[in-house]
Length: 266
Image (tube, rainbow, N blue to C red; front, top):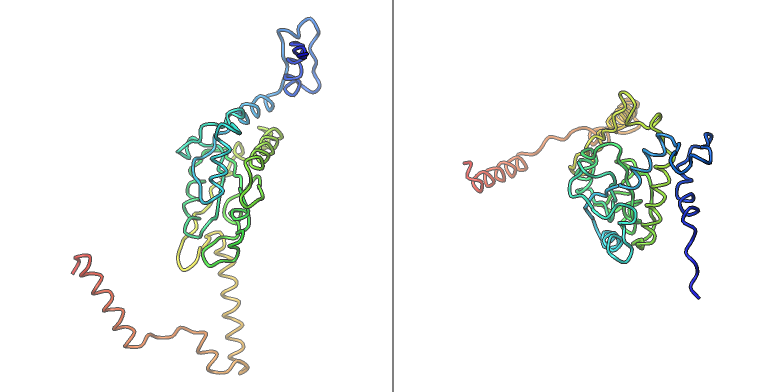
């Protein structure tokens, strides 16, 4: 025998209860027409129910993210079915896959182009800590070294159920926020992240002072050791700059000449 449908009024009260004011109550005769809530609850409900993800993927975790958005798991029940191709229209960045050093500047640049409020989900072991490629010559050991991460989803790769659970945790975090204390409404609280520079390795501009202090300390220790005679003259010379030989300079000039000829600059 089929069960009876639930009581409509009771179902309505259960759905509205999370949005009601915690202290102010409404008389029984006015409950059908009056609802008292707070700005934070309405504001957070609207953001949580329309959090648009950014459309990009990095590796195999992106396939699981695509499966999460398909019909079997259906992200549209969270208001997230349309993944936006532009960071200007996105609220959520899902870093899904291996983050290489070549890709870090692009990810940080896209993050800076997203409007506040913005959130980041680190999906998978590679995005969280490097995964099986940790400490590799071309892989970053965690995207949280460059942009702030709100929720970590473990797995290699995580299942669609795991990603949905992470998104639900993200929604819970949004529900706990207040318009009074969130940083994007505070004066002089820019969330801009300096874009790393890719050279022989990834250079984070935020680490300039640390790199400078470490380099100057090593140089001063080397000079002190050389002055005391403990390091030896050969070691002191090895620490300093070495002038290129004539043969090396000739090879560099030849390479420059070939490049100019190839580009038609000669």
